[in-house]
Length: 372
Image (cartoon, rainbow, N blue to C red; front, top):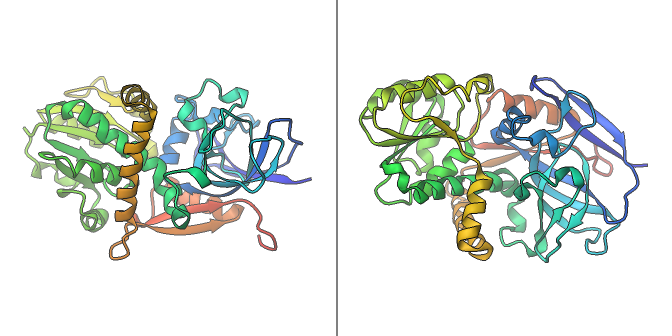
């Protein structure tokens, strides 16, 4: 019998992990088993864990172990067994996976380009996370950029939606956008989009160590360190887009900027600060409001239609991808980690917020033939 190895995280104690191996059960009619070839791990996935209970992220891939969860990740997989007539062994898929070596799906609502996992426990979860894209008919897919797709595709879609949300609301009357964690992938994807808007100044906020990296990207009009906020006019009509989740920084932003039009909370790279994210009652100015990407997808799909929504997103992605992978100044370098201990170590590094912002972590838990 084959087995599946998973990295489990203790809920509420995210630094505690363990590897778990279980025997695979036979497939039921209509199910397929996939080998998860590799997946990306970014600070976005840490946000999934931090909000695991509040936003149901732990429910996508139940561990079956009380107090332990599997963090959802994005990556590529290959079908290795199929009891579904519409899905062939060998088919390659992009989508949302557990941090595991394999997974079982129940494909439904099949089209040439995608299908939905109809597993009963996922029925009430956001539909956008339950879709699996068939690489041979996926307009976002290019075979030679799988690493970058795993690392940036879900983050860029969020970035694109943040930019669209801001434009949809006329930037709340602001002309300056303040982005924290400016070296993070979702932040610079958002900056890339916002930089194309006329009359909008995009200011990246970051630590001193990441200033040069942020400036090299060319998508920020200015890069300012967290301790130099006084270099920005206090009365500037601005919007704060919070990718950091640092309560102290958020309080400082709200206290300094008297003309803060909107405060948008995206993700959390400062895990120790996340417990206080909802405690915005004492903040000066507008209430910090959590951005939920599926809500903007639903709104725009209703307004534009699914085809037009897809066309716009695909065009924006290919523009971004060409910039990120430009050989003259690549924004990202994939670093591969294979096997349980390597995956645990990479997770600990991402959780701690350490490492070079140019490096993207690509992980794999499945055992390669003749390998680990």
